[in-house]
Image 1 (cartoon, rainbow, N blue to C red):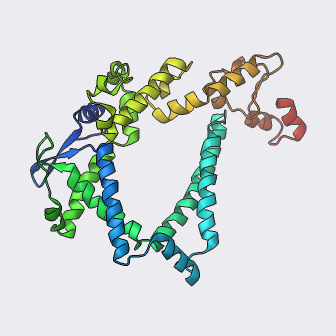
Image 2 (image 1 turned 180 degrees about the vertical axis):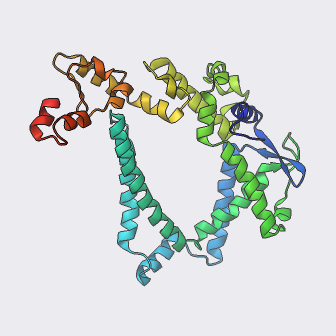
Amino acid sequence: MYDPDSEYFYKRIFLDIGKGFTPLSYLNESVFIKHLSISDYTLASEQESLIFKKALKRGIPQKKDIIDNAIRDGFWTEEDENFVESQTIFVENLNKSKGHLLLKSDKELHQETIDKETKKLNEKIHQKRNITNDSAEEYASRQVNDYYVVRSLFKNKELTKPYFTFESFSELSYTEVAEVIKLNNSHANVFSELNIQKMILEEFFFPYMFLCEKPTELFGLPAISLSSYQVTTLLFARIFKNILENTQDIPDKIRKDPEALIEFSNSSDSREKAKEHLSKEGASTVFGATEQDYSELGVSQSDLTGAKSLHQAAKEKGGSLNMQDLMNMS
């Protein structure tokens, strides 16, 4: 039904986002998965809070108590705890600093560092989650997932006849529950934020960009009633509309690549400063730039007097450059 290689893939996503539900098949029957709104998520959060309080009354420990005991027993340390906090901040700052880099080659090297440090963080977080898996918070989180499923599945497209009651869902076997969760996850993956961004950059969506200033103009609903997918659509439609209208010299090859388009827009000021630098008398290169970097800047390296990449210059010098060579190039 949802074939990413189909020319109708993004049109189908848009159609379902507009309707507010996704029709699928479960046990040879039609089932309609509601796209949840802020109201649904608020009710779920309230339900999770109630489950959490009941778990505490039953004597299930909180995460902080489990961590304190793990530190006392040597399964976790204060250093581990501090690492998760400091590494989280470190990775956030790495991602922020990437946006200030000009050259594509520098960004690629920087991303390698981000990936490496993120992996370290995720491994430590995974270790911590294994320790706190039986906490009251994790118990409440698992239980509220059942609440989401019951509130999401319906027998009719009007979304008035729930497919499950809480009682009938609780009577399902482990295998049956796994199948229902798999069904729900498959739907969620189709409507990922990246897929919605790609949908917005398809040609068929361009006329709708001008209807995204107000939610009632596109979806006919007040903001409070919008599904999370509709909110995401409105948000990124406005972002990409602004980028396409106000960013100069966007390469054709990235016009349908949301991540590259946002990155290109964020670095537009830096590109203009680099071009300004190159236009000044005697400024023929950007330090460390490769031929591909010049292309990304919208500059032909062949048009620059004396312009050479570090690789080219090093090759001409026999394989390496000294400090004076680098100073002469900058």
